[in-house]
Image (cartoon, rainbow, N blue to C red; front, top):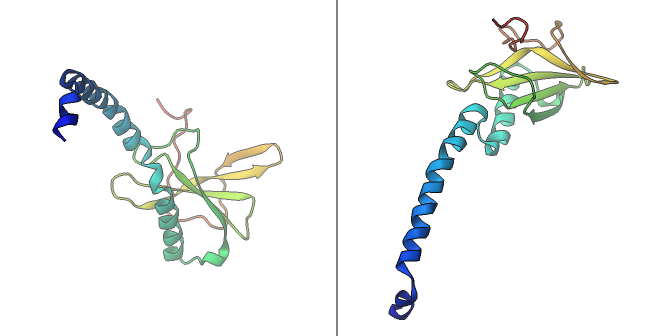
Length: 147
């Protein structure tokens, strides 16, 4: 073992260690900001499972859910909620995706008032009342209403 330790250039090892620590120090704020805004992608399965549990607690069964997927939409959402949303479609409304989000601080699953409707030319956000609406839905901020 001593033979190998003598061959190590301690100057080179300290240089590498110093610059690795400096690189980690510079990069870590970017990872933290991403985590605060978006959550970790590892937790997508947990978010989807929590949404399914929320739907079951509201009184819906898994047989009524046609599809659910985690999506990070390109439109802005409230700062109090994670960017990742769960789009849920039901057997009765297969072309309508109800949008669910998770609160950052308390972890509650909430439904957004807006829904994404699949149209022949693409998807469109609508705010109409539909069959699976929940009371106390959260509105997605609109650029027109912000000051």
